[in-house]
Structure formats: C-alpha cells, structure tokens
Image 1 (cartoon, helix red, strand yellow):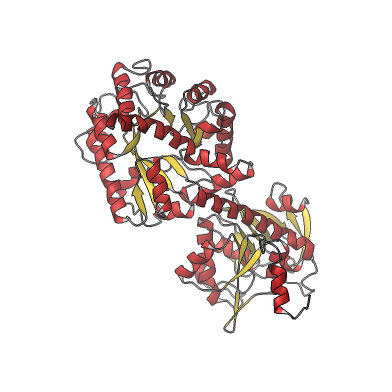
Image 2 (cartoon, helix red, strand yellow):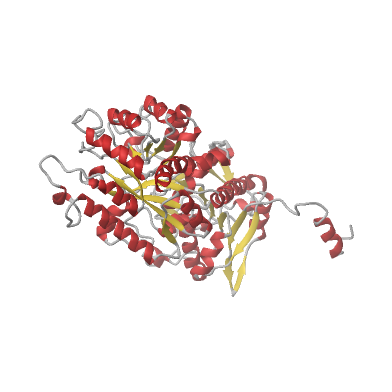
Length: 586
C-alpha cells in the first residue's frame, strides 16, 4: 500500500465489514495552559493500547456540554495537572500552594460528580485522585509535609519509590503483589478519602497513594502516573477499559429491554413537598435518578400503616383524611399531579403494553399499587374503584393483621385468610388486580395461593433460607409460588437481606440466585422498597439500578434471562391477571 495514498488507506478500511470493532469510549479530561486545551500523548496512547477509544474532554462547565458528553462515554479518565483552588474545599490558601488551574476546577468537579451519579467507571491519576476526593466527600492536603521526596527529578518512566497495597483491594487484584514500584511527582495528596472511598495504597511515609470505591463501583484513584510506566502502567488502563466495556454492554441492554422496579414507597414523602423533577436528596426515586440508572418504570404504592389496637387510621394518617380509601386516593391524586407537571417525560402505565409504548416514546412510567388492603375499608366495591384508578396490585396486609388476613408480624387473628379476605381475593381476580402476599403470614400465603384463580405475587420479599425473619419466604413457599406461576421479587431492605452486619448489593444477588436455584429463572425479579427503608451499598437509589444489571452480566446471565428478571416475569403474570377482566368486558 502506498503510504501517502488516501484512497489506498480507505480501500484498506472498506475491504472488510464491519470497518472497526466496537470499543468503549474513554473520556479524558484535558489540561489547560495559556489558552490551549492540552493532553499528554501518554494518556491517550495508553487508552488505545488498553483497547479503548480516547475522547478529549475540554474544561467546559456548561451543563449541556457535560451531560451530553457523559451520554457518549463509557469510562472517564481524570488526568494530572495543577492545584485546586482551596476555596472549593472551604479553605484558605496555605504557603505551599502552587499555581492553581481555575479553568479546570469547576468542569472537573461537575463531571466527576455527574459521572458518579451515572455509575460511569472512573480512573483518577495524580490531580485526578484529588478530583475524586474533592468531588465526592473527601479532602485534599494542599501541601504535604512528608518524610520522603514525592516529586522526583528522575525520568518519568522510572519508578523511584514503593507503595504498599491492601491485600483485599482492586490494586492487589490487578498486580497480584502487596508492594509495587511507582514514579511520583506531586506535592498535594488526598488527606481524607471520605465515606465513598477507602485508602488501598500508602507510601512508606504514610502518604495516600490510592483510593477505591466502598460501594462496589469501578472507581479508582492513584497518586502516581501510570501513563509513563509502560506495561505496569497499562494494567490500570486495561482495568478502566474493561469496566467501561462492561458498562457499555449494560447501557445497550437497558436500551433494548424494559426495566421495572415493582415496589417503592416514595409517596410516603409527599407530605414533605418533594420535587420529583429535581434530584431531590429526600427521596430515592425521582426523574433524575431514574434517568441516571436507566430505569424505565416503577410501581409506586399508597402505603397505609396498620393502626395498633385501639387506634383509628385517621389518628395515624400523615394527612387529614376521612379514612383509608380517601388517603389512598389522595396519594394517587398527588401522583397524577406529578405526571401532569412532567407529562413530556413520564406517564402512568396500567398495562404491559402501555409500559412498552412509553419506553418507545422515550418516557418513564409509573404504575400504581396499594400496600395494605386496609385501603378498601371492608367494601368490595372499593376494589373496583381502585382498579378503575389503574392500580395493578394490592398487598393484602402490612405489619399487623387486618380484616383480610394475618400478617407475618401479626397475631394469628384469622389463622390465615379470613372469610372476607377470600371474597377480596376473588374480587381482585375479577377486577384484574394482582394479589400481593409480601407481608402476609405463611398460612395467609398458602390460603391465598389456594383461593386465587390467578397466580399471586410477592412484590418485595427475600429468602428465609438466607435470612431467617418472618417477612421472608421459605423454600417451600418459593416452590409453591412457582408451581402456580407466580413471582417473588427480591428486595433491598437490609434486615431482610442479612440479620447481622451491613447488607450490600452482593447480598441482594445472593438472595436472587437462591430464589432462581429454588424456583427457576421464570419466577423472580426486583422490588427495591426504595423510600420504604430499602437501599444498600451498590444499590442505594434508582440511579444505581444499572449496577444490578452489571452484577447480572458478571454472573453470565443471558440477555433473555436478564429481561425476565427486570420485569418480564412480572409482566407475564400481569397480562394473565388482567386478561380475566378484559374477557369479562368483552
């Protein structure tokens, strides 16, 4: 081929199909010097060598630029450079502060926080590790008082000091050693990692050399400069590109399948005047978080607390209402207001078909449910009333027996489902409303399974074999539920995931895999219980739900199986239940 023939180069590109393999795109933050956005070639060459596609990100703080940039990258590389203005940390400048790079500060702090909210893999180098700390709750030392020299005069490709790696760290998994040799040229360092990170490498004099996520996220920062260290440095870039490729797969998967969380209690916070169109820190589910986690739909319930004996619902209701039905209607009215205010972006869905239609139109969906059959006020006609409002399920009870059935935390008032409860279940079948036995006592569960002519569901329940609490389901219950075609959705309430210690995303995956082992892949899903005390490290709110998909991909679940878990199984039951009413109407 003629080296200087453009046509020859093009012919070579088009000689086969496809022209290029799809690779993850790595955004690289640029330096800023004398009016120029600049980048050391070592950064982008290492990204290419690791199998990624480098994309330079200029230091621009415009929100439209940053948000759209994040939509087009699969990983973020935060590069080295000048000092941060200490005012970003609420500090005054110390004598050792060097030249700050004000042009970079706000753009990089913003893009780091927004990338974190979107679960984008990140690698921070030198200034980049400090960016991670500054943006995400840590602190930076303006000028280290160190025993060792941390700004070497030797060639940058020459390692000059050792760092010790934590044995249970990402870095140890990458290098397989407790000590590695690195280069070093800095005078600032991370002083405090903050709650989102832990320190995983130290120099001999105790300076922080690396931090990594404590939330099971691919976020890593190092104080040295691996872009100069050839093969040893390349390992870190391969780590970033590998996770970026996995993230790209998850994004593509979410674009093709429907992602449905079957239970959240966000309406509990309506009395606080929450702002659903803002990223409201008081709630775990809002438009921003759903978008960041690439979540399509959620079932929001009107939760009714079960009054203690001798108390009326009016005495404990968060609003002044006539009774349980009025309270549920008020909650649904407030949801309708949210939908009207945000009509271009979100809508109520009553059927599986509407869910898919909204996704195709680029909208999120809210489905309605009732948590505690107390809402029907002992009147079967109220089931039809709520069905006409669009509810898709009623959780028969909550933490306490009611007129319908005994609760898992009740007093065996009826020894299962009452005579009235049997009428309720049959009317729910006629009205096309799913029967939900989360919170039900074990005998209530089996009674409902026998009474219902349709499969029943457990919208947010875990496995008793792994966490022995009354609210969880035994293996026998799981098998019985599957035999009748129902579904059980694991939930994220820490007390239902483990009895001791802090629960995490890994515990949720264990419960899911156990349910699959017992029931089969066609009978499981996810009901987070967000804003009802649900949420664990790695799955703390809706913005982190793509992490659930990443865990499924790491466990080698197929796309078909992931689609079933993410709502396909639930929608199968919903179609079956709703078909009864549709046939009656015909």
